[in-house]
Length: 238
Length: 392
Image (cartoon, rainbow over all chains, first blue to last red; front, side, top):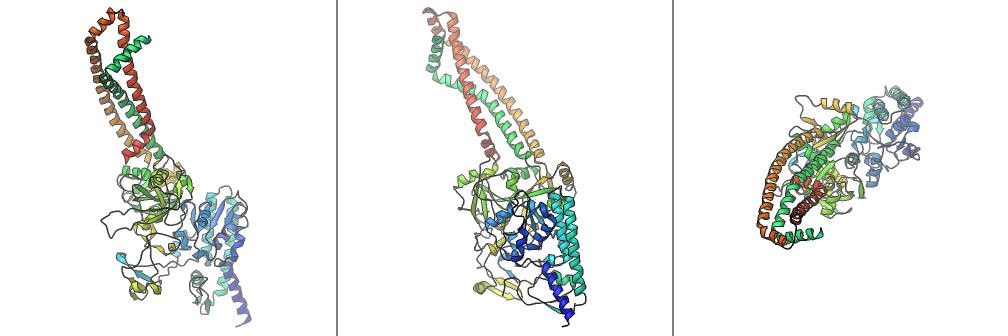
């Protein structure tokens, strides 16, 4: 492989790393830097990308809480006390697209939930290859889900950030200009990543790119990546 | 003066039956209209208070009274259901928040109210013991329901089957009590609150069972065809949601199509309320939006009209009873002529005789009014309970 090609793929990996920190617990620590301030509204998020977007937009006016989620946020199994932390938050940012299965077993205040991907439900990637089963009179069914790593597509990530900005403006009036200015800065950064990836991958459609997990669907679709998956769906699977 | 009162008292005590009948008549004459008025006034306050606290309600088209009574008191028959997507539609409008309600199930005599924890903030319900619902299968119990069912946090409540003859119907669900509400002297005291998703589990729209793709479930699998697994009827379905099996619970179908009895709608402001009501005016609309106060005002107008008829009848009966009592006293006066002559002969003045008879009448009236006041007081204290029994 030529040196400049190696450099370009390294750059791709760096860009992906920026967009895909949700499977790693270590990357979430920075999101709770303002947790000590009790007077600020508290925003709970279900994964790191949303915590990062919220932190970038909310800045000094909000406390972003993500530290209570241990392990892989997508497959987290909360205890009652963990759910209670979300219940008392001022706003709960969820990813939508079936991300965070625990949401279906937890009791959360609907009035505080913001589904950041609600605006592009029609762009969800449907994975209909899951195993189906049947028992009793209700017929066959499956427990499959929609591909949930929506933020890997920078265009969708920008829409999620916009949903967060709108929610902040609506719920915490008085800081509209501050939130919107910071959203524009974040949008610019995401567009830079989008442009960089577009530039790097535009002529690589035929080159197989090995993916560790089958969770890069939105990235693949955005840039036409020829992805080859090697492992199961969970970050901790062997 | 004391001798006059003593003579009057001795006369009343000696004629116990007549005195008792007279006092009972006076008591009823006074109590019936006053007590009825207290009950109606209390029911008016009780009905309108809860209705005033509830800005708007949406539900399937049908009886608006049934919808309001079920949503506010969880007591009338369950109205037609609408889909959960209607609750989401309210949020999507950004004009209000919606608090979904699903109330077809009971645990013994107590309604199981499926909702979201927004309901607790909306009604200012406080947990007296334990904690808030956090996970599927948990419940928080109203103060009076907890006393009646004799449960504390950590105990379990089992939902009642919809029909004892429906063997293929909904299985009862064993729910863990995690909190007891402080008494709020409202219908919430008698209810069992669960997450809306838990009521869908009771309904059979979500369930938990062993993983059919695992080797230990092989004996329950009839056929594996491509990606499809067909199991036999021996698949064990869980009737209790515990930390060990909570992950096995899953929903079948699109939750936005799942049923709701109603949703309480809390608009952001008056303008939002008006705009929102306009959204439900279309001819093909399957959902109605109602102001509970309007429905309750209509109900009260009917109740007050009936009350007026009843009071008119009671007043007429009272007048005839008073006339009868006057006749009783007059006849009594005539039958007591020999007694009165005896009093005159032993030196009693005419005025003294009149004072004795007047004292008898005053004592009878005072005791009748006194008893009526006690009954009215009891009605005022237990009126809300009486109203609840009447409504249920």
